[in-house]
Image 1 (tube, rainbow, N blue to C red):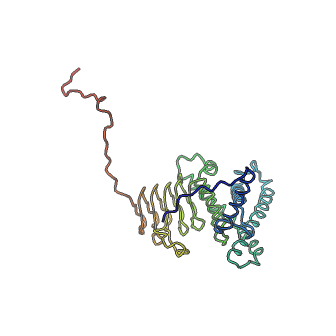
Image 2: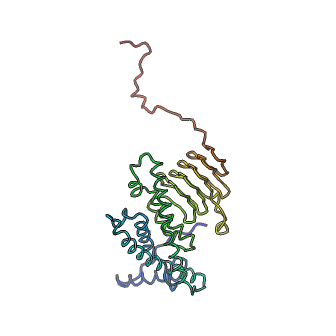
Image 3: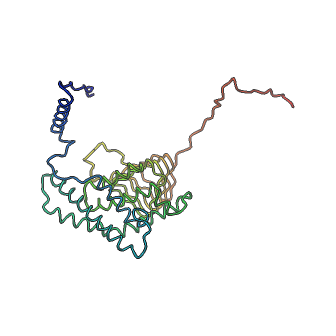
Length: 325
């Protein structure tokens, strides 16, 4: 049923001050009438700006010398890491504590152990940093090795949108695995907005993962990707249908890509039971909804191309068959 067209509000009587007061009253009344789009009398929320700042700080920690402070030396590295880690710990603890309290309030069950839970979560996350750095090194090497246009790994780290999106995803996925609400999704959507690459924090990515170009890539929540997988722009790793809505929560809805798979631009691979076997190649613009055996190439039969001369008739020069010089 179509909504009626919006009607302009009646103009209140009086001068600018009276009209301003009427505007305030109208907005407050709207806030009180619609609880879905307000957050009032409900405690602190995580700050989106603070979460984005955390992503930037964590990139400094994961790629020391590339972002933030430069000209680092082995003599100053320990002091730098200690100072940066302390700052990240304080910022992350505040945001995690806020989101845990918020979740408890939303469900009407105050979390009396929120502080201890937040401390344990942040500690576990920070202990994962060396492992994340090791995995990201494989991603950077995969991008460099897989792109003949790459000059060196510095260029890959500084400028490749795929590496940025994967970096943010690995941070968000770690927090997602620690059952932190909301913050991982803020992080992933920040990367999505900047790169056009949409990776849900729940997706599992193996090492040496490379997204080439990247714009328009979608990787759904329950996707599982093995090692040494390469994906090009416009690829969708999605669900067959989301008509079930919230009833599908927790169900494997997205595909599995085994080790060594390559998926070229514009391909769509859908369904939680769809498995793309080891070293398979999915060609451009393919629509796959069933499993593919290992070492298989899937492609669409090339369409017939038609060429038509668009030169205006009056400008065509038609020579007789028997012309001579």
